[in-house]
Structure formats: C-alpha cells, structure tokens
Length: 382
Image: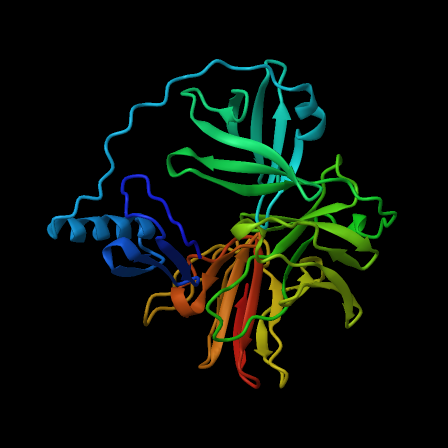
C-alpha cells in the first residue's frame, strides 16, 4: 500500500492511496483520491494484456474530465543530456558487484570508460539489461540524461536504487551481496541438481516450477535458488540449512524463503517454508501399467521415457503406435496429470489441457500423477 501515489500523466492531488493485489488468476488495483472524494477500483484476469493500474488512472481522469475537472499534467520537455562526470574510485570498490532481491540476481560492472553496465542472471549466464549508464554527479543516467539508478548505504547494507524521475520516486531494487565465511562444502553436490515439489494438491490453482541451485564463484557462502524466471539468493548456514540474507524495504524484499534438507525413504530432499522438494534424479522412468494413489494421497512422479513423441487422440479415435514410441494414459475422476519440460516448468495439465490431448507433452521431462486416495491411472508406454 502507498499513501502518496504519483502518476506520470495526471495530478490527482496529495495523499492518493494506492493498493494492488491478486493471485495467479487475477490482478486488482484500488485508488482513493481524497481531493476529489473519489474511490475507484479495477480487477482483471491474468490474460488481460494491458496495464491495470494505468488503465484505472485513465478511467479516473476521464470521469473527472466529464465533471469538468482537468487533472492532466502539462506536456513536459524532453530531459536534456548532461555532462558525464568521472566515476568515483570508491564506487568500483564499494558498489560494483552482485545484488539480490526476492526474485532476481543482478550484476553491476564498472567499465573503463566510467560507465556502468547492469546484467541479470537467467540460470545460464548474465543477460545485459542496461549496456551503458553514466554518472552525472549524483546518479546514473541514460543517453538522454534521465536518472535511472543511484546507490546508497543504510544500516550497514548497500543498495541499488531505481529512480522514477517523473514521479519523484526512488526505491530499493536490490541489496549488495557479500561473501559469507562459511566452511560447509555439503551444498556443492546439490548445485545444478533439479528438484520438483513433492506434492501438489489435486485442486491446486498455482503449480510451482521446479527448483535448481546455483552459485557465483565470487560469492562464497551464497546460493541462488532458481525457479522459472525467479532467482533468489540465500546464505549457507550449515551443511543442512540456509538463511535469509536480504533486508530490502518495500516489495522487493518480500516472499523470501530458506532451504533445508531432510531424508525421506532414503532420499535426500530439500524443503522450504511452504513445501518439500524431491530430486528429479531419483525419479523412475515411467512404464506401462496401473498407477494407484495411496491412502496418504502422495503424488506419483516419473521421468518421461526418452523418445516419446507428442500426439493427439481424437474423440472416438485410437492411439497408433509409431516407431519413436508413444505414451497414453487415462485420467480417472478425481485425478490429474501434470507434465514438466526439461527446464522443470509445467507445460501440460490435464485440468486445463484436457484428459485426452497429449500434444503438449514434452519429449523430455517429468510427469506427475495426483488425485484422491485410491484412484488409479492406466498408462501405456510403447
């Protein structure tokens, strides 16, 4: 929640309250505008292609315009380019380096031409975000002279600050990561391995990606947990546990978690504050037969046989075996099947994709059978 919201195009007066929210299925936005005694809200499903907060501000401005109130800001002149200043030597030693937030790891590099470059970790390497930013004496600016980043130290921690100059806003977008004096080497064998949530409820709306652990050689004692497009840094605490290391004001310090280990049926699993994670290397390859959900309701997890091709079974049709192999299954009432690609992202769900449509099944990956205790799935693999 923000209690003094600012807008690029409009001046709604002082003290505008803004609150957003949502789930994996919808987003919402609320504005309370005291100066005009106005409350407005919007809700949209996640397939909405626009920007809900921006659309709501447009609607509010239009409503006021009809009532004879003009809240449109005057056209602002283009920001003039400014003279670049030498990069302080202290910046290279104190602020260049790695930064983390709840879902991203960022690298800031000081270049020989007194510019900085920002890059984001994507699980494989670091993707350039801003190729060149120059120092204007107080902040880092783009080619037009628009302020984009600044760097500060507060309470013994260093932060990269994002700047929205037109709104007069600066916000902490990442905390500098520092190496930790940890002697544990137990996490080394876990790097690069992939883990899937051990259990997904039959009626779950949100299906999480798998998790992979990474490290950066320049940051001993720091792990990076990657899930889909989200990468969260955490510190090694012991051979079997990690700890939170981020303290970031506002939204980029939310939803943090830690990882610990546990042993289940002779396998080493990871778990966080929300669910258990099972290593995919321990999954058996899926075979033909009947798969029953036990009385505990445990999910059944398998590797998809290599060489399987995706195909569709038309209504009233039949599966035709092909040289490269085939995979088919029935989905009983109360059952569900979810398939993940080799990057551990869900790509097929029988609830949304249909119980007899297999064209989204990956050639390589993993498959999950889940449902109410006692139900059985019939699987054919050839």
